[in-house]
Amino acid sequence: MKILSIVFILFLSTLLYSNSDLHQKYLNYRTRLLNEFILVSPNVEQFGTNIPAVDRKLNPDGSVKWLSWSDGNSNFNHWLSILALEYRLLKNNNQDYRETLTMLIYSMLALERLDLYSEYILRKHHNLINDSTCLNQAIKYPEDINGFLLRDDVTLGFWRQYHKHFKSQYGWHIETKDGTNTFLSVFQKGAIPRQGMSQDNIIYLMQALALVKKLVDNENIFGIEMHFYNNYIPEYLKSKNIISGNMIYFGRWIDDIVERLLRHCYHEYPSPKIVLKPLKGRARPSKNHFGGIMSSSWYIMNPVTNDLVAEGNGEDMGVWMNSYGMAEAAKAITGKDFHYDNSDKGLSVYLFKSLLFKKLYIIKSAAVPLPEEMDDYMFRTLASIADININKNSYELFYCLDDKRKKYTYEHNPLVLYILYKNKYDVIYRPGTRIYETDKEFYKNLLFEAPISYPSTDFTRPDYSPFWSTSSRLNWPNNKGNRNATEVWDYAGMDFMFLYNLYRFVFSPENYKISENYKYTNINEDYKKYPEPNFKGIDAEFFFMPPKEK
Picture 1: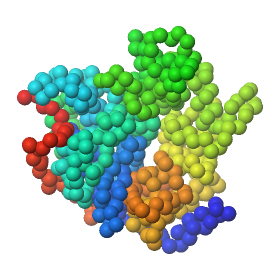
Picture 2 (picture 1 turned 180 degrees about the vertical axis):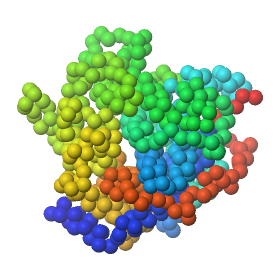
Picture 3 (picture 1 turned 120 degrees about the horizontal axis):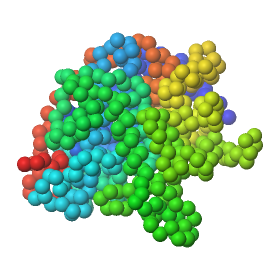
Picture 4 (picture 1 turned 135 degrees about the vertical axis):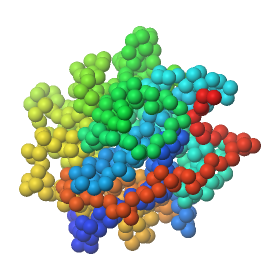
């Protein structure tokens, strides 16, 4: 009965709106995101720039109480994917895509910034360096470009300079004096401060990178404004032939980042393995394997503290369980073999496929079903990147990802799979086939349901939708709504934008454009409205910019 009522609500929405209304909604979401949730800047090494926020809490009068960059799972995944799809749709429709390309490059460089400066930030945070330390001791080049990334670098200095851009007050300093009560980033308050990426952050990032590589061409970047504080990142990109002359080679860039991420998740000898021992409850790095139930070289370390990252680190053997999928995904993107530690053999492969397809195979033709309610978001994400099927020629994965389960749907994954492997799945998923036509209506109706007044928990709004009332329905599915009468949250809406661009690319790619009055015309100017603020005489840790050699 509940499912029928949901379908009826979605059906009614198609009577109220047209396809042009749907594109107008996308343009409105896009404009709001650029004006209120991200600071786009050619100062690509300034901490905090070019990373979108995700959600914010509102005061009763509708003003921003505080803004959050969330836990890092949807920021890069959604934003890079949105831009890659937008770029391809614009270019295929002979539209001007320069603005989209510029923003994509800026956010890719934000990843490079995180990779280069994360160790410096931690060395400073743990008092391993001081202000008088020379640059080559604070930053180790090229060793620090190694795939270890903090989840974000949205700092107090960034907030002090740009809080007005986000329609927010500066606020007062919290106890640690590295943030205020009006913004929240994992940088200043995660499970631990300056928290590194977990395995799900890395897996979601890999999905976005796969789309960038598939959809974005090598491009001439002459005239695109970029300001570097130091020469490390340009030097590195040129050394890898990612930038050569005026050309930028996205395929090489994506391959290089993915290889760094994978090597950060696997630790070769003489690094210790993590060992799971009875009564310990979790695995830890250890050179002593005596009494261990199992061990693995797949885990995620903080290279400065020489300890596991705070969350999603492999102490539950989770990175090992995902190792087959991670290696397959990296291989699908780069063409290189990353199956270290026999990750393509034995138990890890069996468990990965069993949990993905909800079947414990006893023999080839017989299996014990597993609960459908079991959440498998990392398996699904990796499978969408690498086309992990029961066997090479099987189509079962597509039906698995497309099953529209009541709770854990993750609707973007079958469309991502189709885009990455169109030559294969076009046989079963093309205009005229039942599944294609049914899905086309499903996605269109779901997108129509997204509120014109933007995703929110405010169920008193006339256009409130329980389907769009969470930070990202693609990462954290929510079909019941979030009815909290005491607090109102609203969201950046990147989940809608990501799903809309997937929908347009797969089902309706023609006549996609962004008119001039909806372009972010101040892309290289908006940051100039907010000059560098005064930091002197204030007892706080601003982390405003990376160090610069004198």
